[in-house]
Length: 180
Image 1: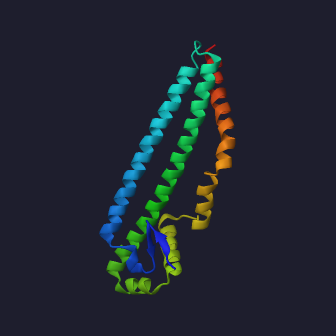
Image 2 (image 1 turned 45 degrees about the vertical axis):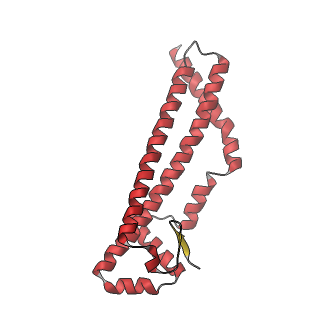
Image 3 (image 1 turned 60 degrees about the vertical axis):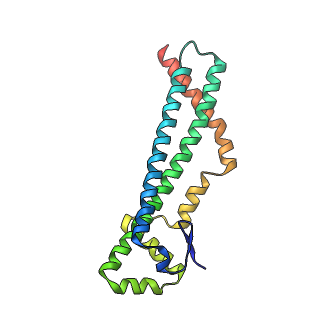
């Protein structure tokens, strides 16, 4: 059984795709990355607006609490954007590693033959090692999976809800106190 590569099952080196298709996938990932960065920046701006509004002396306690709730919600959205941005960057790194292998294959026909003979698991391991060597990265796919999924646990997010809101209230109060 092969491994999953951008929505398709890979059993051989040829299944990875042509360079032009990989470059198109890279372009798509770059667009997603830029969109995620813009959405994160927009969320950060919303957070600041809530904070500025809530720190005003004319803001009631209930309005400040509502702002803190919204700020906590926005904090979680920013974390999710960060996770997606990180995952997109990892995918771009892997894709760049594969493109580097494709480029090396053009210069060395034996490399293409060698890659073509690898089992799906060995091919996947080779792609990962090539990417790690290229980026000098130490995380393997299992560690990466753990890092990504540990931040998306439902229970974890529910627990953060109160902490994020409390942190936002503390920020609001600190700004109010600083002005007083």
